[in-house]
Length: 311
Image 1: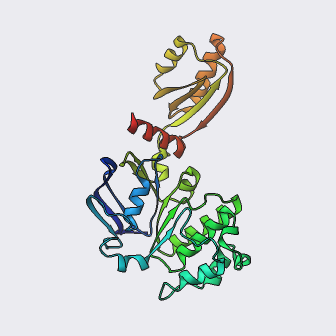
Image 2: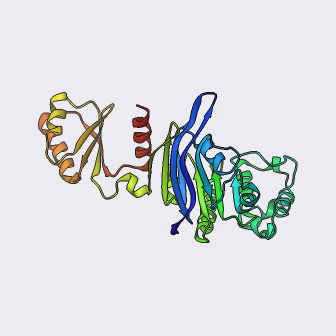
Image 3: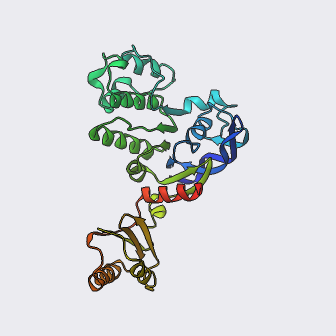
């Protein structure tokens, strides 16, 4: 990753529809060769943001540059350098797989070999099959091949593994990482937290058109910070026992998640576990059914940030 070269830049970008602000003063940078996952709840502004980056929509306010170009004003120079994988649509239902690959290759001066590309995405045996006859996962793999055929410098992936079985998903992840290793900048939108954690250098979390977090998955999870002790009981803790726990100096926080589920935040998780079990035994409190030590998952962070932003 060329950390000193910016491939994507958004500066105070805004876009509204009928008085509703879909993107609200969004600013971020993506470095050349970086893979960034853009996450957000439905209606957060992810699709609008990506469509502006792809040159399909013009921002109402702010400035966008992708590969040093305005995706709208410089579309004739930008489009040949971008690969776009849509989640669905954009392909004639009756076209055959091999025909589609050759057609898309004809749009570029120096394309990849369509046959070799179909082999790489696992569709070599489907060249005579019509698009409408493919499974959902096979359609996704064809869309990926069509996005790659022009040897793009930047790749936009919209839910790239939706509908794929586990083997196809792993193959797709391998191909995406190969592209990044070759210097391609990748912007990924996904609802899969596992996908974001496995692939992304950084994760941008958007809520209501605003950026609420932008960092590596490890930093967002707080891998260098305190750990969580997850406890599940067969009943709620008595209020007096919960108050005693919250007074312990080595516990940074005790979160009540409801239905007998608690999270104890501490840099000494084993000590926290010992204290909790001792209190339950001593007080004859609820029965412990699960005790697990770990840090917050990316999904935990995502839910926390989006809920806080919407509060």
